[in-house]
Structure formats: structure tokens, C-alpha cells
Length: 244
Ligand SMILES: N[C@@H](CCC(=O)N[C@@H](CS)C(=O)NCC(=O)O)C(=O)O
Image (cartoon, rainbow, N blue to C red; front, side, top):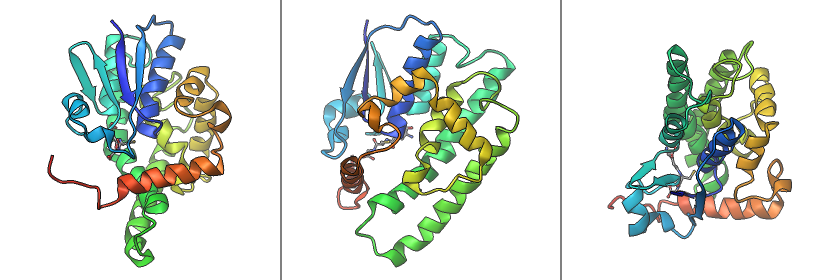
């Protein structure tokens, strides 16, 4: 039976596209994956239909028969367990991978996401109100990049010689450092790893979801403007409803 992925062209969304393509690269015969683009700017994530599959009302969500899986890192783990490969190894190596997967979910995603929002999307917020969160999330983002830099010393990928779901979770956020303006250039191991991951054919296919190939590495001015407008709509306190 086909699986469905309800998603959008964002770092958390691309993780799952990359995972599916890397499973194919690993020789797994994957079932058909039906993609459904969710328009976040129009609030499709708040619909009844979406909320039935993901009570947290955010992309991505994977629907596999009777099972719906929310949270991008849980989806990576689900696919890694369902289709065994080196992307989620067994034994001690598994715990090495899982702790870095959870490190992404608990640290890199929220911190890089907040830094990005204050840098690009909260254009109506006065500069003096943005100063503290920008400094806080900027410094913490750079600290996290340095944690990763140290982990990558002498390694091709985060947990050793093979790419794993930890790399797949962390890469889409780190590669967007220019967009979030967390300047990583002094993290030489991270910069080299970004290039190494980007060079993989499965990663390129995953990143091309929702974006033309010639814009994967350099967005057009129009895409930057549209993404900023969409991000502003999502980040606005006006549309944030606390009551579900
Ligand atoms: N921790 C979640 C984060 C998901 C998330 O924040 N998704 C964003 C797009 S990257 C979203 O759907 N935003 C819409 C909104 O906040 O209304 C995951 O990793 O799946």
C-alpha cells in the first residue's frame, strides 16, 4: 500500500524526502510515496483533516495505512526501523545515532528555527524587541554548530563512516545557515560535512522537493521574497491561536 507524506518545502519537510531517497540509494525497494503539499501560509495545517493525522498541526506527517506519524525525527526513526539499513544501525551504534537525532529535535530545530524567524520573518517587530532573542538564539545556534564541529572531527558523518538518520535530521538546518544568519564559516568540519552530504545523489533528489533543481543552492530573489512572506504569515502572533 502507498504511504502518504503531507509536507512542505522546509528543513523539517526535506528531512523525510532525503530519508526516502537515501533508503532507495541503500537498495531498499520502497513502496510508492504519495506526496501532498500543505500550504502553510494558507493555514492548511490547521484543518480538521490535517489535525486528525497530526494533532500538533505542523508538517511533516507520514501516513502509512492505519499509522500516522508526526515529528520529522520520529518519521526518520519509523522509516529506519521499518526498512533496516545502515541509516539506523543495530547494537551500540544505534544509541549513538538516536542521541544525535534527539539532539537535533530538542536543540538544533528550535534554536535555528527561532533565529530564522527573528532574522527573516518578524519584520513588523521593532528592532529593540528583537535584539535579545536575536543575540540569544544566534549565540546558542553557534554553540550548537561548534558542538557538531567537534563531533565531526576526524569523521565523514556524525556517527562515523556512514551517513545516518542523525545526519539527515541535522543537515537541512545547518545548510541553511546563510538564511538564518548563523555564520558557520569558522566551523570547518561542519562546512566540509555540509558539502559532503550535499554531494550525495539521494540528498539532491530529496532537496529538490518543492524547489527547482537550479535553486537548491541559491534561491532566486522572488523565492526569498515569497518565503519571507510565507514565514511572516506563520510567525505572526495575530494568526497564532492557543485554542485548538
Ligand atoms: N518538531 C517538529 C517541527 C515541525 C515544524 O515546525 N514544521 C513547520 C514547518 S518547518 C510548520 O509546519 N509550521 C507551521 C506552523 O507553525 O503553523 C518536526 O520536526 O516535525
